Image (tube, rainbow, N blue to C red; front, top):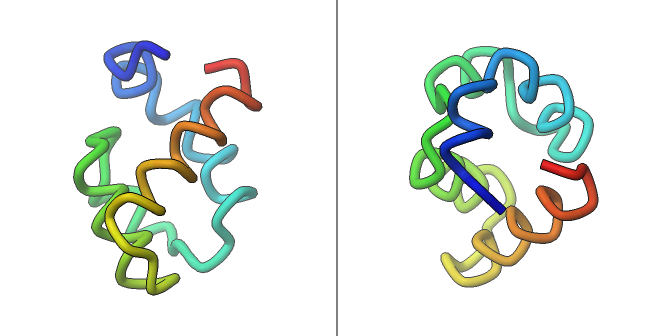
Length: 67
């Protein structure tokens, strides 16, 4: 997975992220702005994930989504 590609296309990817993690608000997604560490933090905040769990969720999501 190439996170630079996700970050560069964040506006297009936001919808997929919203589908995956429905607790993320539009404001959250705008704040995240494609930054992986921000996404990890928001997943921890909204879902109570540990950092490792959030990282794994993101990796699984990106792989499933073909990102």
